[in-house]
Length: 289
Image (cartoon, rainbow, N blue to C red; front, side, top):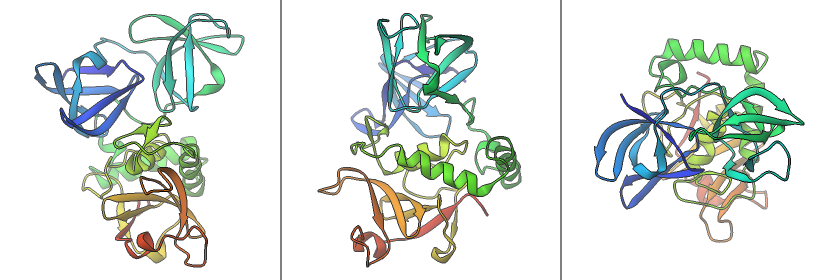
């Protein structure tokens, strides 16, 4: 299977060539399924399919160690100091090939087109999610394999603690506060409901389904409302949110007066209570089963 890489800060992925469904972030691989004129039909590493413009991707035979951008927006500069010329600006979740060289707090990086640039080291984080394929260990394609993957993830990055993982997912979701709603979006420039939940999980090592529904072959499974804990997912008709605990949930909503990331409550006595979502809650999902 041919592999290309997103060569823009954000590349729109279309369900059809006139219908947005997702976004590819810089440095992420796309597995080419078919060539269609000026487009490629592609599959993401989390097994989501769509069409991307050929002009938005690049082919590269080998990519070294990648790290993930861990801030809202950051420039890749020509030299390791603030006076450098910006080559490209990257958002949270973008991937960049890094070297071991650090100068004055700037890490030397290699862009997909071969240019060498520099980024503040503080804005890079470990990449702990799989991108080389739609892997069973990164999903629930095989329950036993996923459970082993999840335990290793917890042991390696979260001190073996489910609670630490749940807290981290919630903390990641909260970093998108102030972001506008964008259909198909998944970055601080604009994000939708499933973009918020899927990125919050992916940046912490687990690949969930990109849309607002449970799908077999992914790790989220249904539990009762009484069982939900922080970090679990709340499913509504065409909408999804992340439970923060204490009756609160975070989501990206296009509702008039919100238009972006918001925190609402399932408690009718809270001022941020939304009756429509409380009464419209269809399912609760968790990766801990």
